[in-house]
Image (tube, rainbow, N blue to C red; front, side):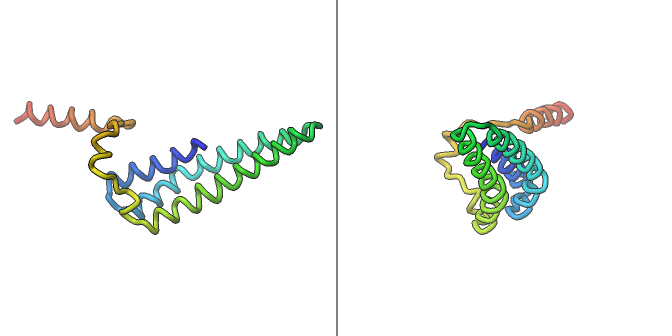
Amino acid sequence: MDYEVFLVSRMQEVYSQTKEPKKAILAGIQDSGKVVIAAGLIMIAVFVGFMLTPDAMIRSIGMALAFRVLFDAFVVRLTLVPAVMTLMGKAAWYLPKWLDNILPKIDVEGESILKHKEHKTERKSS
């Protein structure tokens, strides 16, 4: 499911600012946990709607998908992922240099542009 992106991206954002894994995990759950819960509940509601049809095959698919989302959103995303990341500590954020060089630098928030702009204004004022 894509709602994992909300949770872990918020954790990564806080970790890159503070370098404190526990604080990053707590902030990720606190800020993005609501999105994960809402997305999970919406998807469960849709799949429960499938269970209201007269076709037995559609009902069984709806039940299986509803259970899958329930397990994935609430057990895996909100329990296991933060628990494993807490146990791993800073090792959860380790990225080998060679991989860091290969991966593209994506700046969703635009922080690198702001830093570049601040650096330019500091040069002009000096």
